[in-house]
Length: 165
Image (cartoon, rainbow, N blue to C red):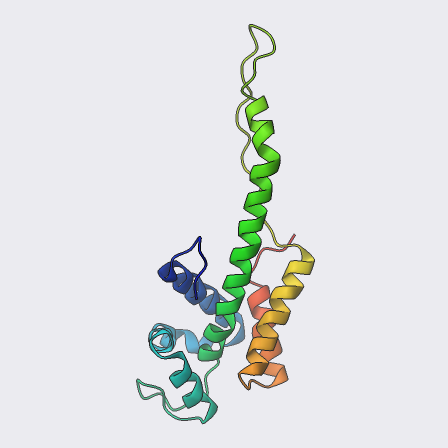
């Protein structure tokens, strides 16, 4: 799960964080086991998902169908999507603000001081991007065999944890 601008460890940490946040809404009872399930998932994603699909015990002996492995599997492509959105937005902001920032360095009058650098605007996903994230998450969950209701719950809880403008 990599993006050129992000290390594998960063991507894994972001995926874990977003999955845990979405589980706070979708399956809060699973959070106590989240660190162990996440570690097992990142060590052997297919093994954990296949065990879940057959309702077998995962590596640490848990014998219950959990949403956590699916949440982790769903957020991996979502993090990739978010990375591309943020990267493109950052590139656009640099393109549009570079001349403005340089212009702020110009002093038109001898006594005029350069303007203070404004704080960077907050970043939020557009509604269209949020819909794309939800669809990505839902499709990923359905592709893993999660039923429509649970896939929808997972996708909705995930998007609910993102900033949308």
